[in-house]
Length: 210
Image (tube, rainbow, N blue to C red; front, side, top):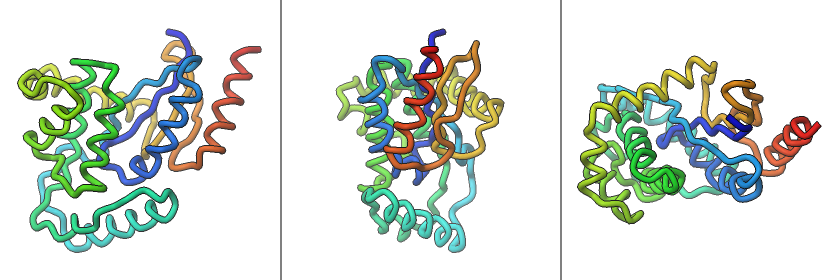
């Protein structure tokens, strides 16, 4: 497989939302020479317990830091929700579903789910909400729902999580460059400004051209 960029992220990761404008700049600037693939990292997949007051405060503080660093919008009314279960598997599975239906829309889907959760306070753990979001991208709602429920999609989603862990990725966002056969080089592990990411990718490009 030829060299590419591999973006490992989670739709309900606040720093990934902060990094969203940067990743779009990377795709626009380098997409022709280093196409980007998206792998679901699995921030809190399978969570069953509702958020505690302490967890809410920790996440609220993360959101404040991300907003300050990135300028991305956040709807803090989210923290008024009662008994919310912060399970990141359903929105990740929605992205994997779209990847199977129309790979060209996978980044649009990922970004739309992020915006719905962080800026619009929509419950992206709810399959109906996810179907609404995907429908707005122009995909058939019934086809998405069938794909979302399919055992193969569930398996593929968890395979993404396992792949990320086997690669040693412990935080999101993570952007790698390389290939499965030749190995990967870290472009960033965590949030970085566009200029720094651009510099890292350009340095990688110069190395592979030699």
